[in-house]
Length: 204
Image (cartoon, rainbow, N blue to C red; front, side, top):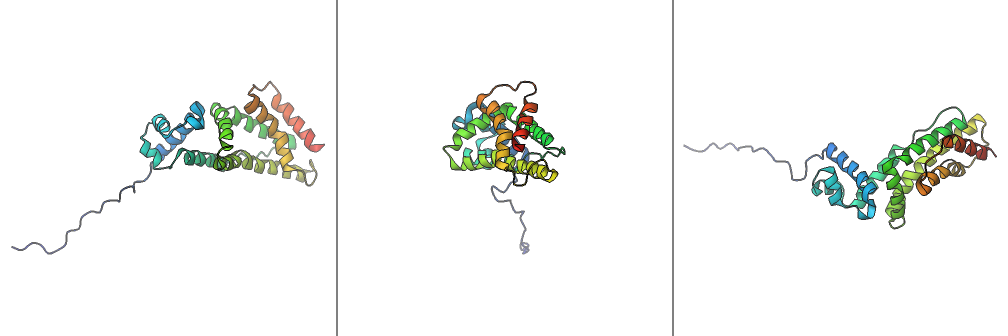
């Protein structure tokens, strides 16, 4: 009896490496990176430490990012993409005060208070980190400050041609100095006084 001449169709296997990356694992790795940055800093951070903190193997990290530098740059860029909420209180003082509240909350976060200074140090050594940090810390805030200034000009609270860079320096600069550089707690009423001082300087 002859064999069945019809070809037998075998199920095709997915090519190696074609598995979809699990989002929960990716999220765990990202969370672990922030934890490692806060605990040991960028220079001492390792893929092994990240994987251990995330509860995954090193391969899971390397499948997503080729190095710790690529990983950190991706996270900083993601933070930049989220941006800051644009205040819309109807007054220059209200907008400045709201912006200070959001910035102070972010800078007082225990992870951010460790990660931001460390990344600024590394930015001096790695142009790629410098670009990403600039995007995360400056470009987003510059866009929000531009909106605050634009609305204030439209309401007649500021003159045409008000300098956005100067506004950003006056609003966020003292707060950053206090929380990130000097690292001292904010006294009661500090944000109110800073907002009033920034508005007065902008109108001068």
